[in-house]
Length: 164
Length: 426
Image 1: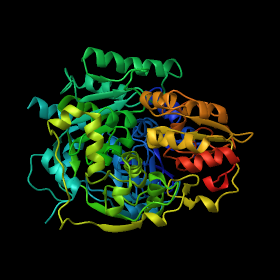
Image 2: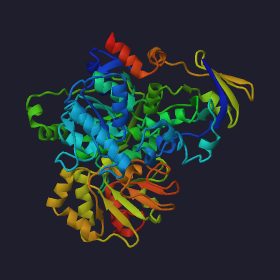
Image 3: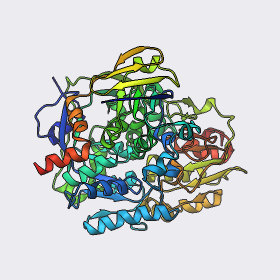
Image 4: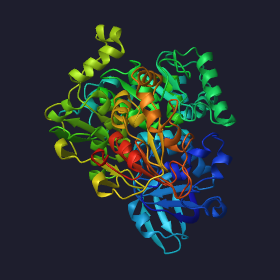
């Protein structure tokens, strides 16, 4: 499976408080969360993002609070993939659990610019910057994580285990 | 190959004799917990997955603390959702406002005797790493992980490698656990311990009270740590003997020690006598400076409390320093005891009267302003010295407000002076 879209680019240490500020956490409704996604560091994001677009960021993406509302907000905003140099631990789990595709690839992050058209293939891990023609390969997921992703997230994975 | 303390706890909970960094394991959990923000989405997942019962009604803990006392109708619906679930499943550890054992989750859960050395805990709150102070493995997760753990009593972990933090010496006057952990985060950065354990050790550990250790472990997440764990010593044993005398008497806990040949990715030595009173300037906890170097920064508000610094020792220290002093004109100082028990202690000991006389406002236990929830939100351009744990953009209010993190002594001195200050300035 592959995705293609325009890049929104951010720096290092994007925390979950700026992805979705706590003042909006009185509801976990994806549409509500998407309407406020990234508003404290990029007020134009929600108006400019189109379904399929790709978020690219530096080290330690999603640090801070454990709020699962953060990957839910990003996914509901239409973002099809987050590529980062590295992910904070809890965000990494949460993204996989809620089905927000993520890829770790510092080389791609260093080379891709805001507004570039990027395509990524989840099966091969190949990321192509269509604008510049460069290609990169993301770090593959461990087998165990792949099984969770293939099952469709942690819930179906847990279900398949408890029912077995 | 030897194992770290964390690896030993994880191995035991996975039914394995040995694990190594990078292994993916399925571990049984002693406690799982959530709060009013993270539990309602977990309940939805729990119900959608068709789960009928929680795995153990005594091991699922729910604490309404983030937006409580309910700040608006939506937050009232969140706590109602959690309360109804707790009643329906007859869980024994749902804490209601005003109960003796109530307060901020990471203050009350150890204090109520729910955590013992060697336990494995996950919580849908990033500061769940607090309980490492007791020699337990504990870490934060999201709502879906919580939901699955509520149903199954287990979860998966990648076995972390560890950074060994060797503490030596004795902290100077007024230097607290908060200064020590801010100092460490300043050294290694907000992702310095990403995916790793922080394992504290060394002779300096014995100089730290349990409340100080809880503050240090609490902020392990602020440098990306999976957990931050302390060895078990007399301080730990004395603490758990008090919090659950029955379990202590039954010896229902295991003291793990790292093997002498355990492997660490890094060893960091900290001489506690050289740690200065430390603050973290906006907008990252790693943006640390000695408090004495930033003294001219004018402030509008001071917050003393939170899961980081709302414990009895914190509130007592605040009272001792505030005695006979006044909050500076133009500064609002909000004191938030972290639990009903700490609040009552402050009432009985006369600390609340000291705060009131000093011109502070005293709040019921709540996370409140720490996460920009309520009870002390900042306006545009305002600056707050806070004993909380995060100073991200917009964390306590307006996107153009600022939070400076500090320990209790610097917070009190700053409230009295009206700018960032140390107790020597008072």
